[in-house]
Length: 540
Image (tube, rainbow, N blue to C red; front, side, top):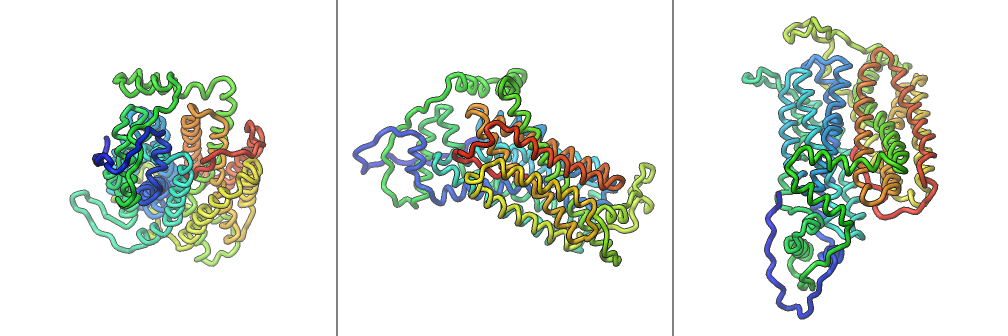
């Protein structure tokens, strides 16, 4: 799906025109409003992925009465969006490389929003689970492709600035998540929709609000074309030139001198890769597509790349296991601690607060929605303000921390950063089991969750370890394993929280310390030289 490309009249006042490389043409288009719009859209899409996947953590504590959720089911529901991402990210990445970046991003954003709206009207655990799975399935299309789309509108010298700009917008989205949740969920209104026989409450509206950035970005992208580098690689030279001219017009306000080029020089590319891409784009057979996907993936698990791929995937799995898996129950656990403090309990461990507030009245035989016995004695319609405050602090730490790591990574090196973060967060996770001062325990919990800083550092290692033709697929595969860690982590917490709470923190702490040890075995980790775009912030 390609946007309309504005025809630019041939320049009349240029006496000398020459063919240039696409990178040079993009530099000639300047860096201005067109680029800033793309950066804002890209960053908002990354923030939309965060809202769609992690926003559910604020819904679970207040929706348990309406959906009759057990703690185990909360674990499943908190992880199901990541399961959708895992199932589809490889597919979307392949289609983006063969059919086009915008061709994948645009429809998947609309479909993700539709799935989110449907999930807000569900009345049972299974219905909301299915709709949230499809939300993750479709939102993966934009999250897997947006970095390539944004980067390909910029020359290599500017792509780093563009990606970090989008990462800043993403960081702002992280900070806004708890604020949006507080402003929507903690309202007291409700109304009945007779046709659907549901009571529409603020938590349902919050789900829709989390999906709005997807809709807004999809509408905005209707005014932007396909990636110029992708079009040029497919042989559409004239369309690519017209896009560059349009960028130049936007960035100069139509007041700059005419661009002095009339053709683009073909850039070198491995013939085998080009032939494979053309075959994939023209193939109509599902079997052939699957075979080509395998041909792109298999080299990562062969020869010298096998060890590298294994280490990177295990590290991402371990990081996501805690940073996302434990985060899903962060608002609920804070809510339980606040509940105990309201009753006058001043000294307690996190797990004692969990045990004291657990409610397990949802037995299978009590699943009748109209049965009062199927509902807990106390239904939480709001989250305690401390849950929002500490979530806001956590997201602010993330935004600032990514900036600091970006500044020091080249000077310090990746290994010290990984070992420090893994070790410090792992020790804090273990100490959480023993600390009986609620405020101190909450701060240790926040520190435990900041292990997500390592996601970007491990991505930087991945860029170093793999050649250009395998690099994007290596990042894709490693993040798939990371999101699998989110699914496993959320379900571990859901199954163990009410019965073996301490074990959940032991698992998180020990796994992070193990990741710290494994970091020493990353090939070439001791080298400090770093190329462009080493550190890219990926949505957690």
